[in-house]
Amino acid sequence: MFFPGVKSMNTNPNRSKGSQYDRNFNDVLQVTIKETLLGIFGEKSTKTIFKTMEKVHSIRLDDVSSKSHVFDVALKDILGTGHQIVEDMILENLFDRKGKVFEYRENFSFSDYVNSIKD
Image (cartoon, rainbow, N blue to C red; front, side, top):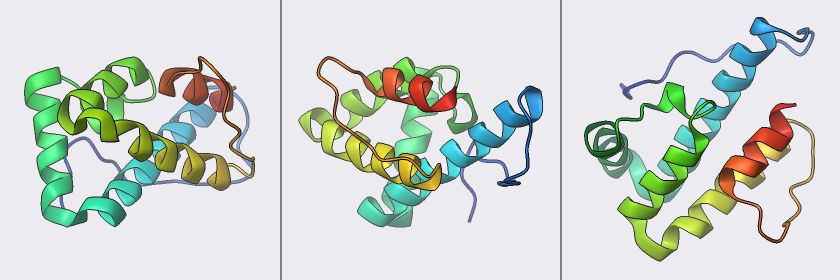
């Protein structure tokens, strides 16, 4: 399967802080987003979502970690009000992969959650 902006995932649990840690987090985030969208929409629709994000919103999947606000806006534009459910599923899966529990926080955006778990 080809997905624009998706690199292979390296999930070494013995990573240290720094650029290697950031790259590993980016990989985990990308794979989590891709797998969650595939589970919800299937391969064809997921590819269409990624292509639309890249064409209309100039964001690739490998940019989401540093441009999570743009991803949030793009997903909202593409999915409408249903984006919140999809984002929550992505976040639940991401937090689970990182060994943490996703807890709803009032006035927290997708970007806020991504930044909180990135640290």
